[in-house]
Length: 232
Image (cartoon, rainbow, N blue to C red; front, side, top):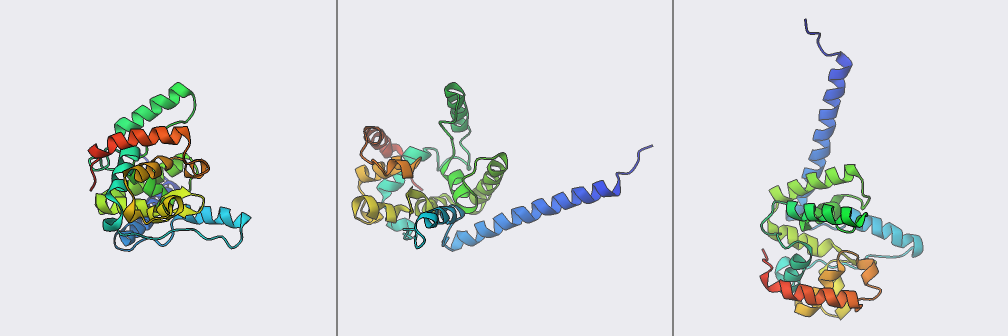
C-alpha cells in the first residue's frame, strides 16, 4: 500500500514551483519591457559604476544610445566575426563553440575560453553579475532562451552594441568610438571596427595598450573574416 507524500514535502515542492515561476516571470517581464524600451542602465553597468565610485565618488559612465540603423555596418560585421560568427543561425547557444572551449580549457588546465554567444553575453550584462557560479550560468541560460524567443536578432545585436563594456566606465559603441577614435560609431571604418571588436573579451585590460602586437594581430585576423560575417 502506497503512503501519500508528507504534507511538508508537498508544501516544499509547491514553494519551489512558485519560487521558480516568480523568478522566471521577473526575467520575462524585463525582457519584454526591453523589447520596446531601451535599457537605461544594466546590472553589469551598475556594478561597474559602484566600483568606479569607490575611487572617484562623482564618477559617471560614458554611454550614449545609438539606434541600430545608425551603427556602422562594419562594426556589426566585426563584432559578429570576432565574438559569434554563427549569431544569425543559432538559437542562443553555439554548442560546437562550447565544446571547443571546454576542450581548450582542459588542455590548458585553466579557463582560457568561454564559448559564450552574443545572446549569452547580453543576458549576463542585462540582469546578472559577472560572478562565475553554477547558479549564474543557469540564470544566464534561462535569460538567453527568453531573449531568443521574444526578440529578433536585430534587437539582440542593437542592445548588445549599446550596453557592452569597451573600457573603464565606457559602455556602448558610440562611447567607444568617441573614446578611441574621436568619431561617432556611425562613422567607423573596417579597421577601426575590427580594433574595437577584438577588445571585447577584456576591454579594461586592452584599453591600456590598444595598439599592442597582440591586438594588431587579432585585427588583421578579424578583417579577413568580416566579409563573410552575416549581419541581421
